[in-house]
Length: 328
Image (cartoon, rainbow, N blue to C red):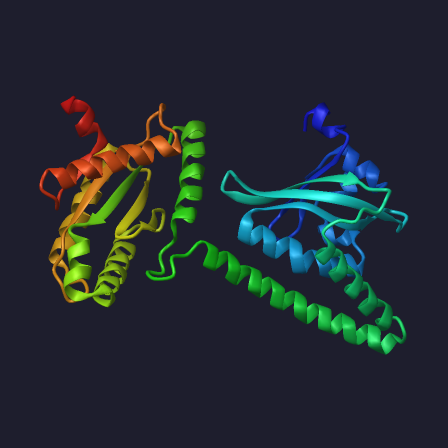
């Protein structure tokens, strides 16, 4: 960690999806009166009261899973002397080298601000609940047991939310958001190691006429059957997703131009030979292979142009973006 970030006028820490601290700057360690080594590897909730743990679970994790960021959360952390340190927290969920982290910045707040009245009201209700549990050890034990149960339920809900956020509800394939995250990860790996990969955009030919002739239920059945065919025909290292409407996309890990075209042609033939939704359909495919000049948007655009060429050339065919460049 460079010195500017290490001694920035705000605390910084990065945690895993399960809350384990992976890194922290010196400002954060000083704020809590700990040595930095005492923070790394610990769960962030180790530095929270029971009230703030509950608040963190009911707001921070679900919001991060759904939206990928949080802004201006007011809560208190506990220093090594068990003193409350009120802070304002911003966080963002990011993927680095294939792993997901939640990077957080905190600013110490010595004066209590009126902030997010609905969040504050929730916090006050939780504090009242904790105060009531202090009446007897028995009530405290019951609350602890209830908290453990709720924590497990929340972890399960968070997992379900993450799955729903990354899955297409009709076909069960990964959705465009998941594909985009995977594409960025492979793009970063390509720039580090030079490992090639390709993408193939697959579009059902004349899908509108299927819906118009047979109805949307049959159209949906065609989509789900095609999704099943693509999924069973893909390798474990590939990423198969619904790109939108009748369009699907496959990220072919490690595939160069000729390999990607071979795979795409095999898929095209399999689609033509299959009965999907009790119909015989065809699909057009556009393929693009990563180059040093490509960004994620540029690579998708190249595959999309190749797909357009397959459509314009009579459908039911495979076109690689390099074919377009050679024809210019």
